[in-house]
Image (cartoon, rainbow, N blue to C red; front, top):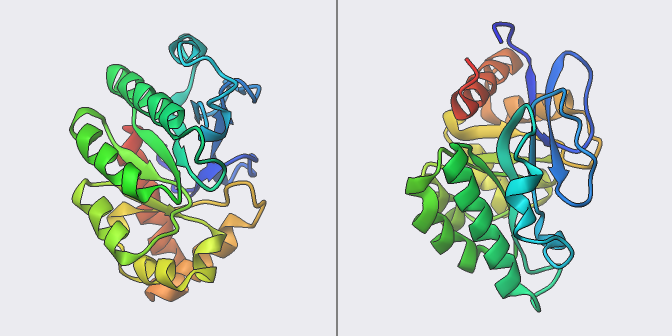
Length: 218
């Protein structure tokens, strides 16, 4: 991967050939395309319809998997199955540790439980990327303490508290994504470059380097 390309760090739609799209698949829901780099995991929305024992089997023989995710906790969707969500989350972290893979985190209204869990497991896993981060500076700084990468989507600019973290995040911990929005990732790069007062090419290069570092692809 010598050519510096745009990185769409978390998406559900593949972009054109000028963009490296890391497509996220929901185990038990999606059909995985094994031909490109991707991530896969049991999404917290699916923890009541997917057997936790099937997680390891589902990714046993897959090719091009570069991370386990998105995995995590979503209390906006349901607080009734918090224990089940946590069980699936921890089992998948252990699977990632066993395989030497990073994890991609989904966290919605669950930081009180998410942060202690990540702090506990962080020393055992290769890396952490928080996808679609929406949160305040306190949460942001706690994530920085455990060396997490943070990926911002188009919703970041609509959240003043999140926008403040985007202004100060170390560039070497930054990713950008369009998730399921279908938004133009190149436009997001331009917006963030303007916000950080750097060129798009500089931003493109640093995120490309972050991608290679997190996933050991250089």
